[in-house]
Amino acid sequence: MSISRKDFFKQGLFSLGKTALEIAETLKSSVPSVITEPQRVAPVSEPRYDLVAEAFNERCLARSNECSACVESCKPKAIKLNPGVGIRINPNFCDGCGACEYVCPVEPKAVALIPR
View (tube, rainbow, N blue to C red):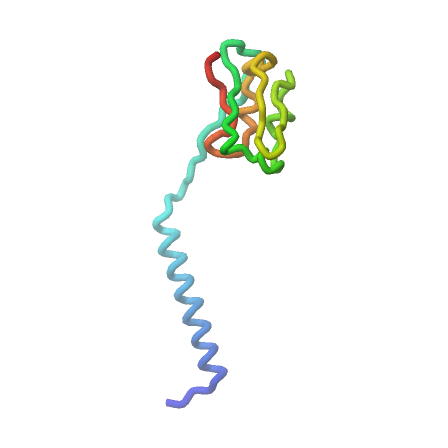
């Protein structure tokens, strides 16, 4: 059987595409149909003075100046950005509202509320 170069490459590309589709279908069937995201609780609007925010700078994107979400969301201005280090939280100003924890984009959170 003789086949032209063009037909040879065309069949090769079709077989690659067919294989890729088969793999995609196999993977699609093994993934659950509904992926649920954990529910985030909105921050409490009133202060909770029994709680204080704590920074976990090893997870914080602010170390490389890529994030300042918690700094911007802190109404009492208890959070300061420390370039190259992360964030610093002044517990004397923190009112425990949780806005910083709510807006933190990393998982696990780089800032969390803990009991005073």
